[in-house]
Amino acid sequence: MVSELVTNAMAHTESGQPGGFVTVELTSLDAFTAYIEVIDDGAVTIPEVRNADAGECGGRGLWLVEAVAARWGVRDDGYRRRVVWAEMSTKNGTSACAARGDGAK
Image 1 (cartoon, rainbow, N blue to C red):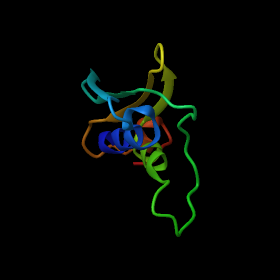
Image 2 (image 1 turned 90 degrees about the vertical axis):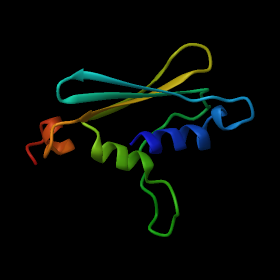
Image 3 (image 1 turned 120 degrees about the vertical axis):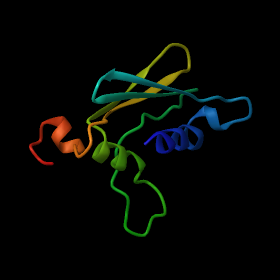
């Protein structure tokens, strides 16, 4: 998940330009939940899940994040900075659906 979010930051934001930066913060919210933040230099577009065509080489990253994360989202964090965050279950055998309360394991 972290590599996907960092790759998106480098490919789709000003962070991928010379002098750009990406910051990754990992926090344990409780015994079973990890909180990930990827902070980038921002972009005109807002990250969103999209449906990639079968023949496309990319375009599935946030779809994967949504499938794996218990929750995820985007927020602006000051001048020209954007945060894409995700919560993941760290409990063995718990799927994202179970962590979200979808009833599946």
